[in-house]
Length: 329
Image 1: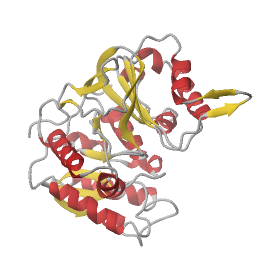
Image 2: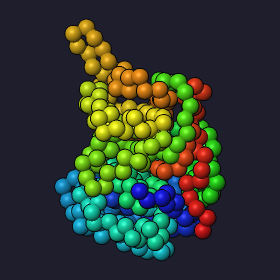
Image 3: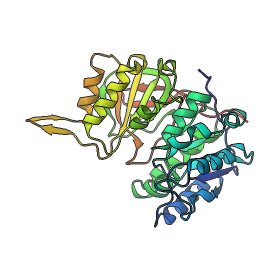
Image 4: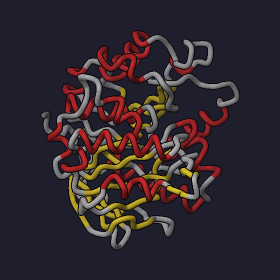
């Protein structure tokens, strides 16, 4: 199992590239992309939009063929001027080119890669193979250019800009993430361990590939996950897959994001919501569960760096990063 590989810290004026490692730019999203670029510039970075985001360059549901997507990502990984890669959106395409990624380029020059949804598959796979700290964080188009404007006022945006700037540029622990009143204690307790996770169905998908994390990767980990557009019965099945594979017996804590369009079960006079199925699968496992935390498909995402040691305190509803996510240049 590879050791944790921290990307090099960004500096003011560094070049970050907004890329399309999964889905294409949809018609009408150009203004969102422009606002996302402006938000990254507000953080102090130079921004370039990759050619793969051109709406004319797409294939089916993706921004290109697997070979084309891998070639573009590998070019960014190998380019010493590029200091970070930001996904403009998620999608359904990352699984198609995992075996084409230049892992040696990542080991030689680790860079922050930011995104969530389908991009979490990329984070988990690269962390499993190289130890790279990937950033489960907002997307350029629908995050920086969308949710940051529609779901947050200027004070909230300023807080997020400061948070992202610090996690990417300072080789020091970020400490407590800004908590919201909506965070919930689903099971009490406190635990510390390296963060690992992403979109739940992508974690399950990854388990069937050579890019699955080693079982030891979950030892003492804080597993974070979110889900969208799934009935709770599907989530119950996916969590049982983690139980049967031994993951739930290895982790120290769990953090659940904000669900999007997750339908409860209602029938025969009974009802089960997301909390019910999570606690049902965990059964008597004595691990803290903090839920409704700000990551997922419905709100500005708190940056969650894979492999970085964190503390989850479900009693006091806090989540803290205890280690830096980036390394000194």
